[in-house]
Length: 74
Image (cartoon, rainbow, N blue to C red; front, side, top):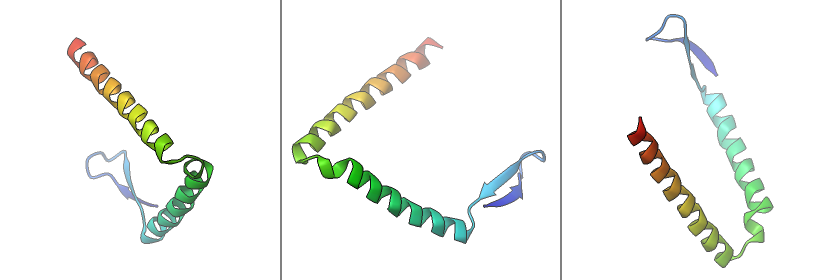
C-alpha cells in the first residue's frame, strides 16, 4: 500500500496498491477461488448450482424492490 495525501481533504489520505501489493492480491485471489471451489462448488452438481442461481436471483430482486421502496419513503 502507498499512502498519498488526499487532493480533496488535507486531513485525509488516499491508499493505493503498489505493483507488489497488486501481485499479492492476484495470488491470494487464486488461492481464495480454489478454496471456495473445494469447499462448496465441488460438492454440487449442475442442477444444484442452477437452483442456487435461481434462489440468488430471487434475493437480488427482493433487495432491489426493497431499495426502491425505501428510497420512495424518504
